[in-house]
Length: 429
Image (cartoon, rainbow, N blue to C red; front, side, top):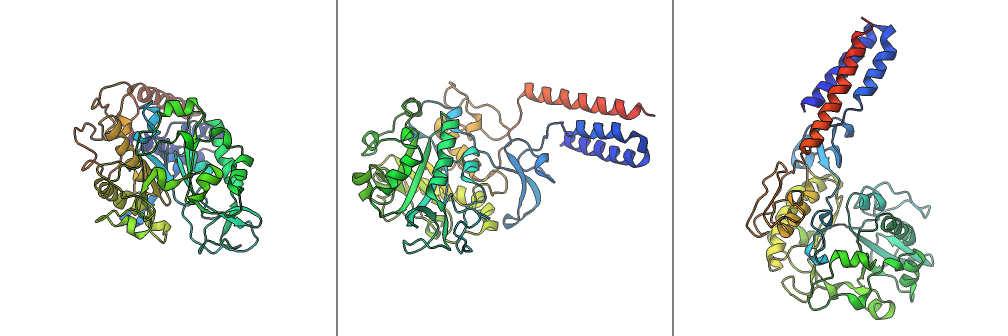
């Protein structure tokens, strides 16, 4: 905070000088511009007044629902576990999923009719993927002779519940996979499409079949998945699951609950005293499938409450479901308004799960490639643990401290700019 306070002090000094010495305005304007180049230093939980005050992967926000009304830096970017611990089976990792990824606040109507429905996210699917989301929940319906994404009821899409043609969102996915050749994305379809072969044609039209993970290679009976390295090498980087069992034989789209265990969604899925399985799913402690989806979102989404849900309720529910699933971590964590928290939120929870599972550290940020289990680097948060996940996933923020070399470089750059600014200020006098 010292660097930020010093920058604010100098900016205030410059403004005062601009008012007192009009002839120095050009030079002082140059000084202000130079000072704005000083890297921001606020970390998770630090007070802020604007996004520029916060470091990379953070934004400036508050969480009144959790009693935090003063703006502070909040995470909005995930650490991809495969960037640190590489080459393990796909089902060893935990991934972030957005519930109703397409149901975006402020999304304009595409039907000419004002939309009447609930909203679950705040940014585009492209931005979700760039921020580290790796699973998308998409509700697909027959509508207007095409497949549309719709947040509706009774299996029917209406012009006041429709969002956009599904191909538009799928093209965003294709662009992301094309630009990021080592990333893997999962799509979960709540399937209300009845026209024959319409989904297959949709994915073909979106040019996504080249990434398709074939059903013939999906593990059954709880066996491990291939390594992420193998999946990338084969370009099997898109997993697609449908809620319609008939599509597996008719269109080659995997029936979700043949390969995935899942807890109940909506309000039953956020009660920390219990973690029931969804009725379509096998019991959570079954070993019939090797992937586990944990839903954590209320039946009725409330944007202002999501920060508390993702910060306080989610860590508790992860522990409850971990026990209910026979000490199995969630491979997918599905939430509303994924960026909202009081600091670390769902990103913190995901980091802790991956850290404890993959390297025995309390955060994936502390894992070191090639190091033995428990050899954790200092990240400013408690790291080493010899315990299981149960009892070790807890609420709190993670402070990502810069390395010594980067900190030294930042300090040198900051001092250079400040020295230059002071030199230029003093010159006219």
